[in-house]
Length: 114
Image 1 (tube, one colour):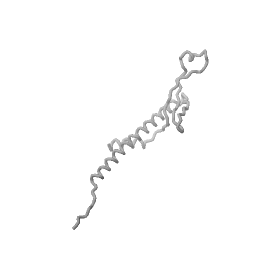
Image 2 (tube, rainbow, N blue to C red):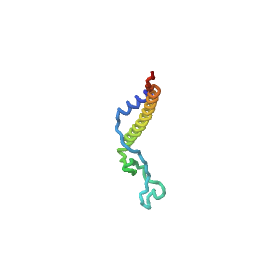
Image 3 (cartoon, rainbow, N blue to C red):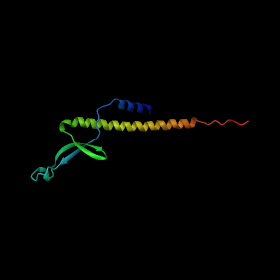
Image 4 (cartoon, helix red, strand yellow):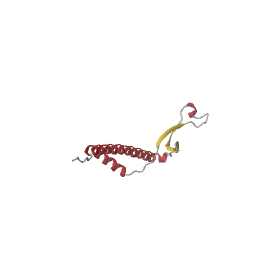
């Protein structure tokens, strides 16, 4: 368990550029009656960055030139938060084990009456 914890901490301390959110791919209709999209062949794919802001989902258009960097940043963010959750879980287990050891090894002192 300590080996896993060390790996996770090492990863978390070796920060990479991160972007909060996830990539959301959309195909759209343009509204032109004579366009191919009116027959079902939609335009796209268009990528958006999806994230919660104030309890609401916000979509931000991602330019094609930025897609690779955004994808990398989002992936790094997802990996980072996943490892933070793993670290928290391991730390809770360690704390529970240490608390159990304390309980087992602790006794109370009652002086003997004469």
